[in-house]
Structure formats: structure tokens, C-alpha cells
Length: 133
Image 1 (cartoon, rainbow, N blue to C red):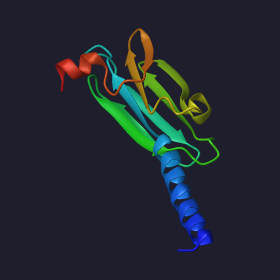
Image 2 (cartoon, rainbow, N blue to C red; image 1 turned 135 degrees about the vertical axis):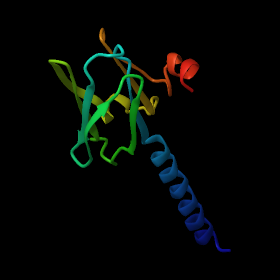
Image 3 (cartoon, rainbow, N blue to C red; image 1 turned 180 degrees about the horizontal axis):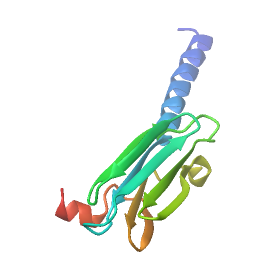
């Protein structure tokens, strides 16, 4: 094989590996767990982005909703969710690609209870791993 051919093969292999690494780092999981008290008003959620729509979903106490996605090449991916419980409502961004430029967090876990919202980077909160799984 001639030296120019070796260089071309090397560049192709390098670029394929580089593209694979970029894709692997851009995959994310959003999880929302309902820990509202039993017997209270149902929690309803609506999550979306510019390109994806998950609809309105009732989320019974003790249940969860999750979705996964890959960020776009320009790192402008943004997902938001709106939450309704009783007479209360709020909305906020659950993922912004700019939060994770270095690629450290791939899982964003939100736990909703009557005290508020809690966010972490575990696959499942400890309470769910020990009690329901």
C-alpha cells in the first residue's frame, strides 16, 4: 500500500471513531418520578422540545415517565416540561444542551413531591431502587 493510501485509510478510521465518540456523548435520558402523596390530585405533565412532542400525560403517584434523545450537532437541544397538580402549575427546562457541554451527565432525574422538585443525575432514586424494583 502506498503512503498516501495509508494516510487516507488512517484518516477515515480516525474520523469514524471521532464521529462515534461524539454521538455516544450526546445521548441523554430524562426521568420524572411522581412521589406525591397517595390519594391527592393527579399530577399531569407535558414535555416537549422544538422538534419532539410527548403530549399531556397523567402520572399516577408512584409512577414515572422517561424519554431519551440525542442532542443536535450545534448543541442547541432544549426540552421543557409543564406540571399540573391540584390548583398549582409550573414549567421549566428539564434539559438544555448548554448545561452539559463537557458531556458529564447523560441522565437527568426529576422527583416531584408535595414539597417541590428535586433533580439528580442517577438512573433511579434510591427509594425506587429499594421499594419498587
